[in-house]
Image (spheres, rainbow, N blue to C red):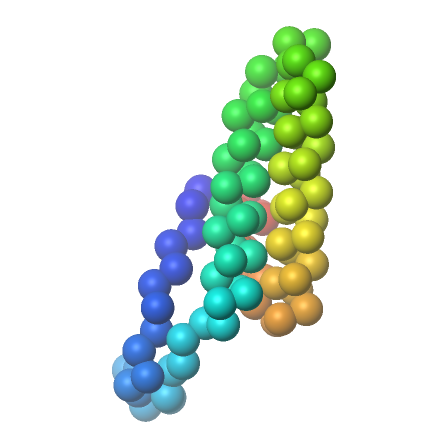
Length: 88
C-alpha cells in the first residue's frame, strides 16, 4: 500500500489550524520506506532459494532501509505517515 504525500499549504485547514509543509528529511524517509518496501516485497515473494547472492544482499539492504526510515520517522513523531503500510 503506497502512501501519498501531498505538500501542505500554509493556509488554515478545515478546523482553522495552520498547516505547514513536511520537512524534507521526513518526505525522503517516507519515499525511501515506500521504495524499499516494494523491493523487499518483490524479492520476498520469489523465495530465498531462487535469489542470487546479489538479490539476497538487495533484500537485506531493503530491510535495513525500512528500519532506518521507521526509526527516523518515529524520532520525528510522524509514524502516522506510514501507518497503513506498517499495519498491513
